[in-house]
Length: 431
Image (cartoon, rainbow, N blue to C red; front, side, top):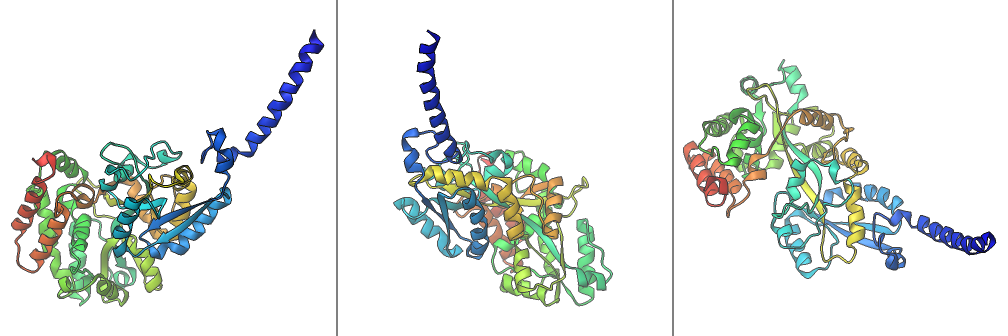
C-alpha cells in the first residue's frame, strides 16, 4: 500500500518542484506587471517602454543617469525621459491626456486637483514605499476624493542666499531674526552695497519673497492653521504686518526693481553688487552653473516669536501614471522606485535638491543645511499651498496687488482688501 502511495506522490512532488522553479524565475515581476495574473506572464516579460513627460529640460542628463539604475533592476522596463519647455508643457499635457496618447507617466504640478479630479490618472495609494513620504507632502498630489495620484518628487524651500565674502569683508553676522535682518540691510546700504537682489518684474517673485519674511511676522504655523480653518482671515494684524514688511524692504532692493528681471537680479549677486538674494533653493544649481566661484551660503529662515525658525517648504511636483496608458502596471513599478530611498538619495545628490522621501541625507553642504533646518520646523508657502483657488487665484491677486503697491497704485490696506475679497469668493472657511 505504501509503495502505491509513494508512486503517486513522487510525480506530484516533481511537478511542484518544476512549477516552483518557474515561479522563482518570475520573482522580479511580482511587484510589477502581471505578477498576479499567471495567464499574462508571457506578456509581462515583453520589453516595455514607458514615456515620461516633464517640464524640466535641464534635468535630462540627470534623469537618464538615475533611470539607468532602475533599468538595471528591471531590464524589461525601459523609461524614456521626454522633457518639454515649461511654457509649452501645459498645452502638450492637455493634448496627451485628452487623446490618451503620448505619455505613460507625467510630471504633475502640485496642489492642483483638476487633472486627478477629471479621471485622467491612476490612484497610487497601494504602491510600495509611499509611506516613505509624509502625508503633508502627499497632500500636494491628492484628488478631491482623498486618494494620492502622484509620487511627490522634491521639496522646494524658499531661503535667503547671501554672499559670504561680502558679509566677512564688512564684519556682518548672519541674521537670525527680522530685526537682525533689517540691521544687516541698513549696514550694507550704508556701505553702498545693494542689500537684496530682488526682481519685481514677475509678480510671483513677490509672493515668494513674502513666503520667507512673513512667517516671523504673522506667527508661522499657528496663523496658517487659523486662516485655513476660517478662525481668522487676511485682515489679521499679523498678516497686515507681513505686508508692511514687504513695503519696508523696497528701500533695500535695486533701483527700479519692478522693471528688472530675475536674471538681472541674479546678475547683481554674481557680480558682487548685491549681498543677498531671496528665492527657492532650486536656484543653487543655477549658481553653480553660471557662477561656480560665487561664495554663497544660505539662511534657511528667520526666527518667529517662539524661537523657532520654520523653513518655508512646498512640494515642487509629483509624477503620476496616466490612466489610459497601456502599461499601467509597469508604470506603477517605476512609481515604487520613485518613492524609494534609493531614488531619493540619487535625486538629491544629482540635482542638489531636497527630496520628498524621508531619511535622505543630502550630499551637497548647503542643501544638507536646509534639509536639517527643515527637519526641525517647516511652514507652508501659504499662498501656493492654500490659496491657488479662484479665477484669478487669490495668490495671483495678492501678487498683482503687491506689484501695484510697489508702483504706488495700491496701498497696504488695498492689498489686504483685494486679497481678502478674492478668497471670500471661493475659500469655504471664509464664506
